[in-house]
Length: 226
Image (cartoon, rainbow, N blue to C red):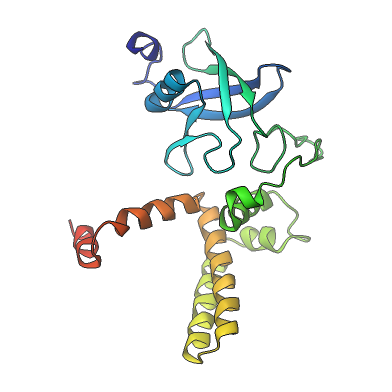
């Protein structure tokens, strides 16, 4: 195993680009990255594990959706710095519910394939909304509020976060339950827009909350001073 892992020059690159191809049709499904640990897990289990740059952690493909990838072969290129794996794709490869992530024609922007599986229930509304916001970065600001907000830049985005936080506080003070829910939803959306503008996945917020869950509030605050 060590000899195989050492074929990659990990000092030159911490992340190995991985092209993922359907073992039956040879269709390119996606491109991802593996660090040493992800490659080792993939070799041992023959199930695709990647390192997510947005989540900043190892993730097993399909851990939320069940759309796993069973690896049938590993091939490394002539420079030992890019991997090609052929997989049996269970479900779909793309979080949008399409078989492949490569469904948009670059020059025209035309979408070349239809959604095969509704993935919203699998990923949850927060992750689905975050990915939708990311997709809106390339949308027409005249037809998409999210694209318009993102196009106006950091000051406008942060102003909306502050504004929605204030409106939630007023609803809270008024003890208006329906308004609290409405304003909390607005605040959550605008926080996700702000996070998306910096490419910070909500998964990283969940990781931080999970880290804090095992310690007292006082201990957590004291850890920030170190």
